[in-house]
Length: 605
Image 1 (tube, rainbow, N blue to C red):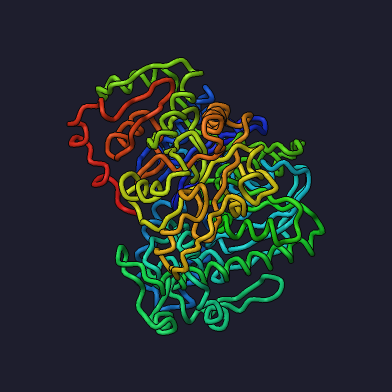
Image 2 (image 1 turned 135 degrees about the horizontal axis):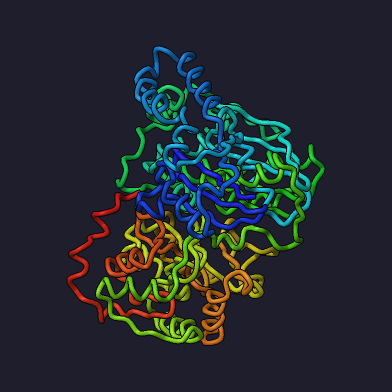
């Protein structure tokens, strides 16, 4: 039985192929079109999934869409009517796309794919819930989904066991934790549906001075985690802006202009909304535990990418174990929809394996063999050296140990927003100036943004305050006390100035509050990446590497060897390790950069 899941027409469109309950392939459309958060129909992703499985569209039994467009349209109509005449402009702008495209999903699928089989639809939050529970290592668990909005729901929770899952309760639009966080993302001058993780990264530089203001005026939060937003302060129901003038007056200033200076006030606001979000998430988790009586929890939805909030649930909540879908946003809902049909709709048996999830390390996208890579490098006129497979990790660990920054392109592409050691830029975390170097000269992004560590799984507890696996970089953990460096200078630093403190023996991956967005790496999940870190550990005594996504600001994660070479040549990366080949920047043709200026090609996010 072959089931193809699709999500599209909002943001992060994707396709996922499930065969007899096994996750075979999943990929976001942006990886092919090179347009970040691409929302278009995922034709390239579908074609690749079919090609990878060696099947045609006629061999697909079901195509399933990740939400129900007519119910979503009902919400848009009702919202427009309730706010009219406000919002009429926004409504009129949205209508052509709905009338020509979004209400005609079956026709689009049939036309684009020449598919004559059965097309099914799954509720948006059921797709998220399915993406969280079915790949998890649990036989039975509670689930909690949180995002901006689906059809009507913005939060759902329920109980799942075997092949079944049932939603017990929901919170409905316009009351949305995801939209509340996005409103502050907008107010702080970042892009909505893209810059939320910047707010999370900015928060540790500030103090939650505005938390009381938010709780007193913007959100009525109950002890069970349910809430209602005070809609007088928000513009998203009737306009193109997330907040309004009343919101500006409450905080005493207009929204920060994008790319303008980030002030201490901005950092304090970020800290405040982050603290409120964590409190809501923790209360919700407590209520879910109380209602379900279960001791394992699965999370999905865009809010579940808030790894600080996830860590609060894991460390301070009542659950013994928490599993988070690594593609928690709408891309992952394509996978969830396909799994929902296999398990709940078709009633196929499901047996979880304790301690091992079915997500396959989320390495579910395209991979390239050595011939493909060599052909691509030759076409680009690249200078390279070929090595035996076992030599690559040894060579690259030497380079990193000597302060070099290396593009790392190995195996199948990650599904979800995080680079997990397949399309990564890696460097030495012990370097005091590496964070600044990577941000300014390689990623071309804001200086405040931290980098994440990859650590050998069995060494994680020696370096970080973590007691469980974190293979998908979805939890933060503090650096252990014995690895921290205490500042004894007596200087009172604040804001970006906090970066002047070394903080730990791995300063490049230690945030200013000593936290790190940690990835634990197991050999069985990604053996070549594990071997690289292990080689580095044996040479230096440090089982940790910097792992940041292989792209520049505004660019999707590199997908193909050609993407990787372009990114490598247009940044100040020193080396590229791609398959069995290593490229030295100093030996490449200097005129390549002029043929493809990557900083002009991708709009800053």
